[in-house]
Structures are given as structure tokens and as C-alpha cells.
Length: 254
Image (tube, rainbow, N blue to C red; front, side, top):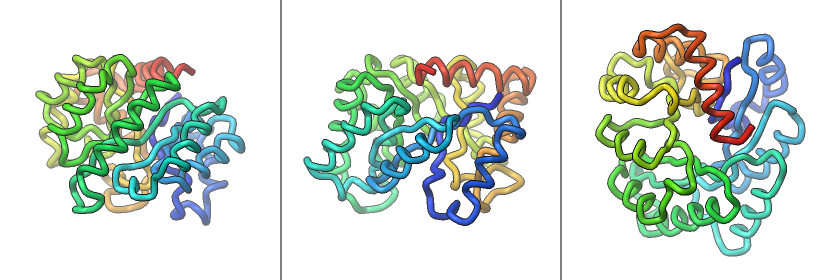
């Protein structure tokens, strides 16, 4: 069964059909979903989704683009949510330099705080890194992220950077981008990364694979990702699904 390691079903684009969509997963081979917090509201909604759906687990964290809403009081709320039974990771957290705001200094501060939180509550961390490869790696190394463990979500860098994350024993979230014709660098990285370190993810509602590129993404599209990985690795689709499910259960302690 497919293990969806990173989705955002709290997003408002699912408001009209969320219940029907999630209800369809089982018969389509989607067994487990980790819904990932990206904002304070998203974390609250994630907690509610874990209560409503037996197959949904949660991650609690603040996306680098949303760290402007953090303060000491609501950071305490993050820690409290992390203690709930079905919360399996801290994240997503990291650095995103695609937009000018929030500035790098604020992003780095709250990234470091969330890494420390993951170590404190003994949960793996979900890393977001966009156009910030060097700074992300340096902060993770400085804070001994290898001792925390986790996954680099939506991995998009070259295999040289993959080597650095493998040295920290991290996993790699691979999603719809792997199906794009122009994703040469990512395909080379996936060829290099051991299967035992790969997770399936969508980042729904974003980054839909071919042939749905540009449309709303969902876990129902994960077979396209799994087949692309199978083609690159020269193994069967079934092997990719089984190995990535085992990897996710090992990482998240399920």
C-alpha cells in the first residue's frame, strides 16, 4: 500500500470535496497519509484531521515563509501539539529564499528553534529547502540534525548535495517533479540515492506530476511518482511502493 509522506489536506483548495477525496484513498491503494503543518492554522487543522481520520498522521511545524507569525507564546503551542499521539514529526521547517520576505535572519532563527524542538520532543524533522542549499546544510550540521533524523522534503538539489544529507542518514521525499521532462538533476540524484532512503510524497495540492502538471495535486497521483522511480531504479512499481512504505514507517515510528 502507498504511504503518502507529505501532503497538506488542510489547504482551502480541498474544502469543497475533502471528505469525498479522503474517503476514496483506501480503494485506490493509499494506506497512510502524513498531513504536514505549514502555519499555525495549518497545524491546528492537521491535529483535527488526525482525530477525524484513522489513516492520517500529522507533522507540526511552521514553513519558512510563515515564520513571521511565530512568537514565544505560539511556539509553546507547537511543543504542546507535538506531544499528541498521532503527531509523528516536526515540520515542515527550513529555509526558503525564493521570496525576499521573511528575511534570512528570521528564517534561520526559527529554523534553529524548530530543529531544537525536534530534538527535545524526539521526533524526526521535515526539512524544506528552496534556493538555500548552503545555509540549510550548514544549520543542520551545526545543530547535529543527523542525531535528530528526518527527511528532506521535495528534494530538488543535485546528487552532490544528496551525498551530504546521506552522511546525516536523512531520507529524501520524492514527488511529482521526478516525472517532469526537464528534471535531469533530480533524476540523477534519485538514481544515486539508495532506495532505502526514498519516501513517496505529493506536497498536495502542489507539484502535480505529469500528466496533471499545473493542476491540483492529490495522493491519487502517487502511482505516477512511484512508476518514475521504478523506471530510474530498474525495479518494479510494486517494489518501489513496498520499500518506500517500509521506509516511511521506520522514519515516523509507525
